[in-house]
Amino acid sequence: MQWSWIPQNWSIIWPYTLDNLLLGLVPPLLGLVIAVPVGIACVARRWLYPPVLSLTSALYALPSLALFVVLIAYTGLGNLTVIIPLTLFSLCVLIPNVVDGLRSVAEPVRQAATAMGFTQLRRLVQVELPLAVPVVIAGLRVAVVSSISLASLGQLIGVSSLGYFFIDGLQRDFPTEIYVGLGLTIILALVCDLILVTARTLLTPWARGRRVAPSPLTPGPPVVVR
Amino acid sequence: MSFLTFAWDWLKSPQQWHGAGGIPIRVLEHLYYAGLPLLIATAIAVPLGLLLGHHGRGGFVVINVTNIWRAVPTLGLLILVVVLLGLGVLSWLIPLVVLAIPPILINTYEGVGGVDPELKDAARGMGMTDWQLLWKVEVPVAVPLIMLGLRTGAIFVVATATIAAEIGVGGLGRYIIDGLAANNYGEVAGGAAVIVVLALVVQAAFTGLRRLVVPRGLRLQARGSR
Image (spheres, rainbow over the protein chains, first blue to last red):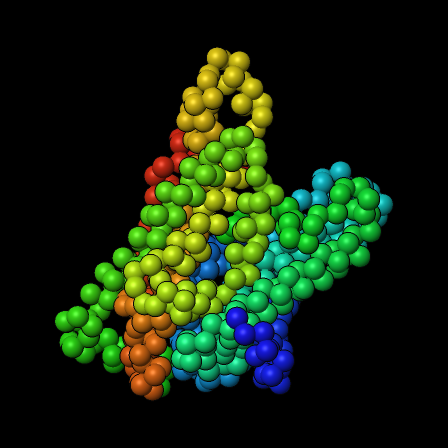
C-alpha cells in the first residue's frame, strides 16, 4: 500500500467516486418510485403478488454483467445501461419489502382508522405507508448498498465508476489502486447506509426510544437474504 | 439490429459448438467455477450456521458479516487476490468461496435460530437430546430458509464466475470479456444469452430442489395459513 498515491491522484479519485455514488443512488430511488405503487397494488389485489414475486426473483438470478451487455444493443455504453439493470435488482428487494411493510400494519390499527372516518386513500397515505416505513427503509438499505457495490461492474463496459481502479490496478499490477477502490466502495456504502438509518429515525418519531437504536450495520426487520 | 438478432447469428454458427472454446465446454467450465466454490462454502456455512443458530450465539457477527458482504465489490476482490497471488486455482477459488458463505450462513442461522421456542420446549419435554432436537426439529423446520440460502449462494457464484473471466479464467464470461475486447458484439450477445439461460436453469433447479426437500408438514402448514 502506497499511501502517497492517494493525495497525488485525488483529482481522478474524486470524479470516479461521484460517478459510482450516482450509479448507486439513482437505481434504488427509481426502484422505490416503481415499488411503492406496485406493492400497494399487490396488497390490494392478492392474486397479483405471486406472479410479480416470481418475475422479480427470476430477474434477481440474472448476472448483472449479462444484463449490461444485453442493454448495450439498446442504450449504448452510457449510464442508462448500468442504471436499468440495477433498478430491476432494486425492485427484487423493494417490492417484497413494501408488501411486507404494508401487511405488517396491525388489523386493529386499520380498523381504528376506518372507524375514525378515514377514506381508503387517506388511511393508506396517513396510516399504512408511514407504518411501513421501517420495513421499506430496510429494503432500501439493501438496495443502496448492493447498487453501490455492483456499480463498479459498469467499468467492464466502460461506464465510469470506482471499478476503474480495479481494472487499472490489474493492468498495472498495482495493489494500492485496488485497495483504494475497495475501500472507497465500502465507505460509500456505509455512509449511505448511515444516512438511511438516520432517515428512518426521523421519519418514525413514534418508534424512537421504544427500542434500542440498531447499530448502523444491523439491518431492519427482514434479515433474510433473498 | 436488436440483441436477439446478434445473439442468434452468433449462436447458430456451428463453430461455436465445437472445440475448447465452444459453448458446451464453456458451460461445463462455468458449472465447475461456480459449483466447486458453492460446495466448499456449503460445507463451511451450513454446519457453522447450525451450530450458531442452535446455541443462539454470534448473531451480531453473522448479521454484520452479511452486511459488509453486500458492500464488497466482487470485481475488486477477485482482482485484488489475483494481483497478490498470481493466477492459479486459489486466486479464483478463495474469493468465490468467501463470497458464497454469507448468504448460506445467515439463512441457516436465521432458520435454526428462528424456530418457535415452544416447539423446542415441547421437544425437550419429550426427552430429546440436543442432537435429536437439532436433527429432528430444528433442521426440518429450517429447511426452507437453508434452501433459500443455497439458492442465493448459487445465483451469486454463477454471476461472480462470469466476472471472473476478467482475471483470466474460463467459463461463459470469456465470451463477454473477449467479445468486448475485440469489439465483437455478436460474441458478447451470444455469450450473454447462454449465461441468462444457465442462470435461469440454476435458479429453477434450486427452486425445484427446495420443493423436494421441504418436509410435508411444513408444506401443509404453509397451505393452511394462506
